[in-house]
Image (cartoon, rainbow, N blue to C red; front, side, top):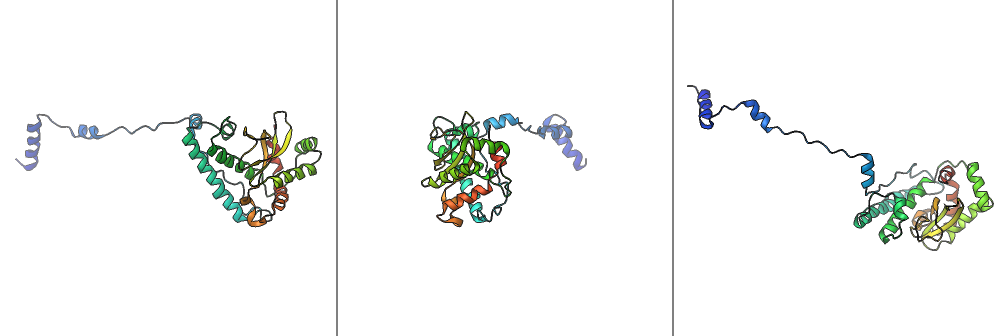
Length: 244
């Protein structure tokens, strides 16, 4: 008896059965684990994290108005910081499945969500209504502004004044109330007209950041100059599209 036959007979004698190689292999196989699929709607409903929106232009898009370093720090550090802290605050408060607008219009906002949610929303709007190519107002927007403020010039002057008179850090706004009327106002810190704490509530259609980090490298303490120049690069098409 050769060695191979000896080993075969030994196995059969010990186990009392014949082992079929194909069964041994198949017994070791495991079915591939099926990945759970999540419908887009379900994923959105349970989402708890907001993401820093990319800029629609480069950091160096406005060399005559805002220097590239200010733009980069403002977006990648300040705005990113608000985004990260908002997500952490929402997780701690067990809040999910809401848009940022739904969150900011809640009756009671924890301080961390009020500050960082405002910072996230306000900056997202701010970047969106700036443009390297200003083409002026549409007839619809110009007509509405004239109706509510008397003239485009009066509107721009009032907007710049609202930003200049905001004590300390804050924002200057144009918002629309439930009766479709436009208002100019300002808020402290990262508050905005969506919040119940705002003196003038409404839907923001334009927001200008007047925190010092938005302009200090180029303008130092000359906030008025910054405001006059920032108004020149506003994307009026975007502003008009936000009106209802």
